[in-house]
Image (cartoon, rainbow over all chains, first blue to last red; front, side, top):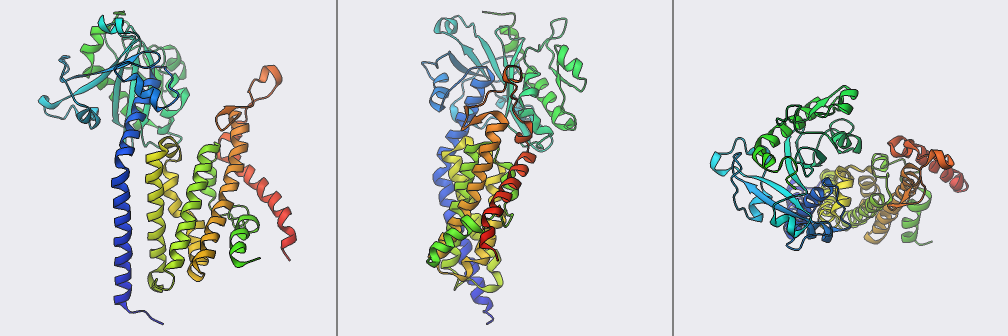
Length: 252
Length: 204
């Protein structure tokens, strides 16, 4: 039996509307929880890139609370220009902040957040951080790679790097999530031999990547991703130059 | 055996979607490096299959024949997106591990296949059981594969260390093969072999 077109159309329309309503309602209802998860996930990466551990979400959030977590406390600061002038920012504004967009934003609205890690209240009072976590992000091949770079007390030695959100090719660009790649940053310097700031660069030569203090391993076949990482790191050093200079040489 | 029980048990035990029909292999390779995500994937697929079969079966007399495939697809995608949203809200870490593979349940041929082959011609309750049976049949294999891959690949079970890799002390080393998808292929073929020997008596 051939059904009439009217019936077919009506049925299709009803099914579409019902499905759309169900999906819309669910998405709206679950959004607050999802956004909270995404935020905690970011914070967790900041904690981990600094080499600290957190068993669960509560411990992660504790690091950013007034009282601090088990090994210290992260304090977020925001500067509004590369001269290092600070500005207050609420959580909502911080959440929607994309570092890679700042260069093209009007000068008055530029914002650069960073995190200082204090091991004790006394250190905080004396402004002697145990290290700094700086955001670093730029376009890879398919997407923006969002990451954090953590610096040691001297604000020169890299403690770790993490890219917590990226959609690069698995097996190529996505290798930036692998331990061996992240480990190639550890202990490297963000200064050159003369002491001027210099962003680490990817090196295809394994020996250079291992021994040179200014290079990390380039993933072969992922040139675009590596270029993006390089560019992001250069920008990070440019944006936070004054902050890094302020804490350099082991202020502690 | 009643029809309902048969609908449930048949795909679960004898006509297993992975071991016999060799469907859903792609995700079986991708999400089985650890037990936890494999288990979550199994639950997600079972839920999607049960509900999609139930919905399609309830609508089977209304669905116009001309557009039945697209209607099935709409129902399945809606369910999959629901599962994806729920995972993002309540199991964020696992949903990140499963990444695109939750969304890809939509294209898992088991789901569509059962809706088209079974739910469209059978009453809701057997259809629901058929969906759950197929989902569990798929899930059981997933968890078995993940068990071996996690144990021999990284020496852990559910994240707890069981086997320590120390080539010097007692000569045991984690198998790199188990970490890559090839390892899943090997285990799945072994399962197919065992399963075939077991089910031989059901064949003529």
